[in-house]
Image 1 (cartoon, rainbow, N blue to C red):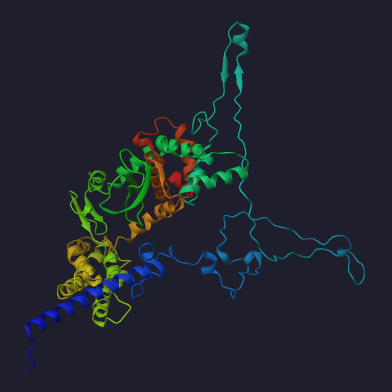
Image 2: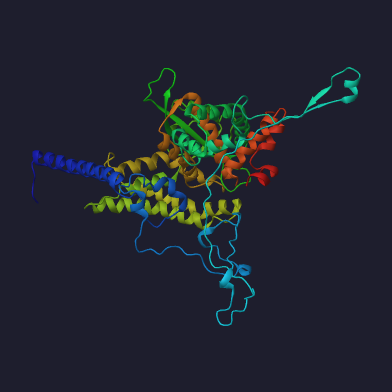
Length: 515
C-alpha cells in the first residue's frame, strides 16, 4: 500500500474540489451559451404540447423569420379541384364563414359559335375550376347620428309648443369621435396583434383619419376605467369561487411610478382557473413589486389549491394549499445534462429527468378519466413513483453550486408542494397552464417595451384580462369588446351584479353574438 503524506492528501482534496468547481462553472457557461445561440427545446420521452411556453423559446434565434421558415424545394399549396355539391376538402383551412364570391366565366361573341359549323353554342353546365382567397383591406366610414324632432299640432294650435326628439344611442366616450368598433379595434390591435399605438397611427392614417398616440391611449384608459374595470372586478369574484387556481408573474416596466426610477421593475401577476371548464377566467394584476402581499391581497377570499412555480411568495397564503410545478424541476435536470465529458453528472441528471418523464407519461394516460378515477390512479400508480424519485434524490451527493446540485436542492425544497398533486384528481402536475396564459403579455411587452404611466399599466392589465377571458370561452375578442362598448353605455345600472352577469363571456346571449 502506497502511503501519502498529509500535504499530499490536502493537495489531492483541493484538486478534487477545484475539478468539481471547474465542472460546475463549465456547465453554467454551456447553459448560457446554449440559451443565447442554441435551441432550447428539451428532448426526452416526455413531449407535451402544453410545454410550449416553458420549454420552447426561439426569440433568441439568430435567423429572421424568412430564413427559418423558407424552403426553396417546398411546393406551392394548391386548392384541390372538386365538384361543388360534394365538396369536402378543407385544404388550407378556409373558414366556412368566409363569404364566397363566384366569378362566372362565359363565352362571348365569336367564341360562342361552333368552330366547325358556326352554329350558336348553347350552355349545358358549369364547373368549378379553382378557389382563391382575396384580401379586402379594412375601411372606415363616418357614422352620423341624425335626431328627428316631432311636434304636436293640436297643442300648437292651442298655443302650446310640445316638441319630442327621438332618442340616440349613448356614445362609448362622450364628446369624442370614438365608436364602439373603433375602440374595440385599437384594443384588439394592441393586445391581440401586439401593435403599439405608434404603428397603429400609420394604419389609421392610411384608412383616412389622423389619430394621435395620445388620443388612442386616452381612449384605451377611458374605456378600461368606465366599462372593463367593473367587469374585471365582477369576474374576480367569480374566479375566487373556484377551488383550483393557477398563478404566475412576469416583469413590466412603467416609466412614471411614484417614488420609483423609470428603470425599476414592476410586475404583472396572473391568476386563472382550470381549463376545459364551463367558466374559464384569466386575470392579470399590475403591481409595483413582487412582494407576497400582492397574492395575499388578491386571493384573500380564496380557499383551495393554487398552482405556482417555486417562488416562495406563494408559500404562506392563508387557507391555500400550494401545488408545485414538476415541469420546472424537469427543466432543471435537463439543463444539468452536460454536453462534454462528464458521464457521472450526465447519468444522474438524465435519471432525474427520466423520473419526471415517467410521472408525466403516467398522467397523460389518465387525461380522459373522471376526477375520482384519476385520483385513485394517482394513489396506486403515481405515489410509488414519487416516493422512489425522492428516495433517489436523497441519495444523490453532488456539489450544491453545480447545475445538478441546484436541481437536487430544488427537488428537496419543493417535495411537499409537488406531492400535493395527489390530494385532488383535478390538480395538474405542472403550472404550464399559467405559463401559457402569461405568454400573450410577454409578447406584448416585447412589442412596446414599457407603459408610460401607472394608469396605462393598470389599463393594460384589465384589458388583457377581458380579452384572454373572452378567448378562453371561445369568443371573438374584437366582437366581444364591440358588444360591451355598445351595450354597457346604454344599460341602466350595468355595474349592478345582477346586470353585470349578462355581460359575462359565458352568458348564452353573449355566446350567440360574439363567437
